[in-house]
Every structure is written in structure tokens, then in C-alpha cells.
Image (cartoon, rainbow, N blue to C red):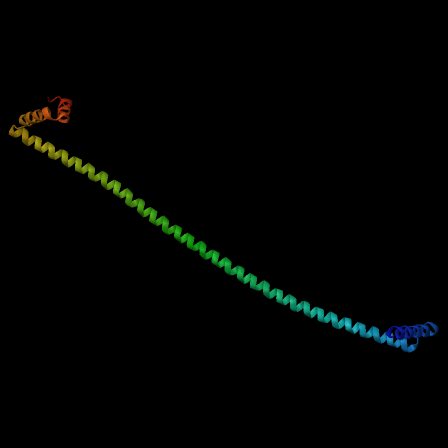
Length: 164
């Protein structure tokens, strides 16, 4: 039923337009429609511009947040780098101190050994002089020869120095 009504309405309106063409009221209506459409388009453009500005300001705010986050990460990286440099300095100082102590120990040991050997040599020389003055050196050699009969190590040492 609706289809029949619409088709009859369409037939009458198109036949009257086709017979008479556009009337003055049709022209005024078309002009009003065009003006309304232009105003609607302007309002829509303004709304789109406003939406675009809002979106751009939102994106700019997000970009600023990202820049702030990047700056914080850069600051943290700088702090980590500073801490690594500080630890490297501490390790270097520790290694230098340990090396210095090690060198001092070696030097002290060498100096001590040289002095100790010189003192021992002086003591033995002093004892030999005392034994020589008292005439007991030949008795010491005899005692060593008797000891060499039981101990092959002593025998080898006395033979090496031609005291047998």
C-alpha cells in the first residue's frame, strides 16, 4: 500500500514539474536549501577544525610526556655512567694500593735477606776466628770427618771442599 501511494505521489509531482518547469517557490526553496547546506558545511568545517585542534593539542601533550620520559631515561643513563666511572676509579685505586703493598713486600724481603745473610756470614766468620785463635779448628775438622763415616751427605760435602 505504501508503495502504491509513493508511486502515485511521485508520478503527480514529476508530471507537474515536467509540465510547468520550476516555479518561483521551487527556486526559492532551492536557494534556501543551498544556503542552509552552505551554512551546514561551514559549521561542519568549524567542528572538524576544532576537533583537529583538540587532537593536535592532545598529541602535543603526549609528545611532551614522551620527551620528559626520554629526558628522565637520559638522566638515569648519565647517573649509571657516573656510578660506573666511580667504581672504576675505586677499583683502580685498590689495584694500585695492592700492587704497591706487593712491591713493598718483595723489596723488604730482598733487603731483609741481604742483611740477614751478611749478618750470618759475619757471625760465622767471627766464630771461625774464635775457633782459630783457640786452636780448635783442627779438632772441628776431625769431628766432621768422624761424622762423615756414618753420614754420606756430610762425606760428600767434606769431599767437595777437599777436607777428607
